[in-house]
Amino acid sequence: MDLLEYQGKQLFRKHGVPVPEGKPATTVEEAVAAAEELGYPCVIKAQVLIGGRGKAGGIKLAQNRDEAQQHAQAILGMDIKGFTVHEVYVEAASEIDEEYYAAFVFDRSAKKPMAMFSKMGGMDVEEVAETDPEAMRMVHVDPLIGFQDFHARRLAFEAGIPADVIRPVGALLARLYQMFVAEDAMLVEVNPLLVTKPSGAATGGSGKGGRDVVALDAKVTIDASALYRHPDSQEFRSEVGVDPQESMARERGLTYVALDGNVGILGNGAGLVMSTLDVVAQAGGQPANFLDAGGGSKAEAITQAVEVILSNDSVTAVLFNIFGGITRCDEVAKGLIEAFDQIKPTVPFVVRLDGTNDKEGRALLAEADLPNVHTESTMLGAAKKVVELANG
Ligand code: GDP
Ligand code: MN
Image (cartoon, rainbow, N blue to C red; front, side, top):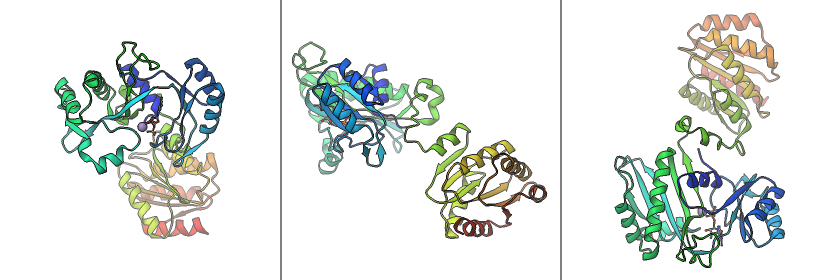
């Protein structure tokens, strides 16, 4: 699960990784109020799950109330690479001296976390990685030992950062690693990791006179399977930008992925659903979704699944492809009959029931005599039929 910048920074703060003061806002009024509270200059930053916001015009510096208002107005609702901005983060501006790059990722081949660090951070880090790969320094961390001072020193010396920031950079990396582990993160990336001007001059500095090191951006991915251990992070699950059918399905515990076509698909078991998508494509159709009702689906799960599929207006026909193993075809038939009773679908259904209790299932369907429901005995036959119905 990817977090928005300000959500990531909330976790940074919790684990002692220094970040500037800031407040999220969803309206221009809220953004202006936040700016007034933080003081000027401040930065208005688009909160979307995509990088390169700076270059896309999604990050703007405001010197006063009018500018804060203008920028919030311009950024809220803006489209950044296909993502609409529903939220901004208003943050006390920092005076930038240098921009570094820092990250912890899982190196799956080494089966260890890996720290990455470069003194060439900022907006073009991908380019740097290509033209000057040596500039990106990496070190593996033994998960049993954790991130140690020597790791930090090695990265700092190899990257060649100035002596005055070696300690604060090392301290920040150690905290970042703590967070990476404690929050079950898959990725934490800070770009830029900022070195401020000496804090006499800087806003929000430590006041000790030296340069401070601050996380100016946060890209955090949390392992979604570990969310049950982090009730706080569950709230980060942003419904913004999530497909409405997908969130509806998630609430019901169904595995659903939205696709572009018009043939609604339901199957049991991910493998069967994937092959169903292929067969529909082979028959010249375009699936509207992937929906796995799971093994052992009871009637209620089927009713809910039909609701999710039909809540997508693009769907012009639905294919039920059920292979009864643990799932019993008569249960599926009952679910479908109930669904027709409750929802009264207006689009045609093609049903293929095979396996455990398929005869009973087909008998139930025949008896119920549902309007516009066609039964087919083979997968390819069912796919051809549904494509014909969807397009005709
Ligand atoms: P990204 O473009 O989506 O990665 O967004 P970032 O948060 O990394 O911001 C992009 C760039 O905006 C940074 O590299 C900075 O140069 C600039 N920026 C962000 N915050 C501030 C700030 O507080 N002050 C100044 N002067 N520049 C900032
Ligand atoms: Mn960035």
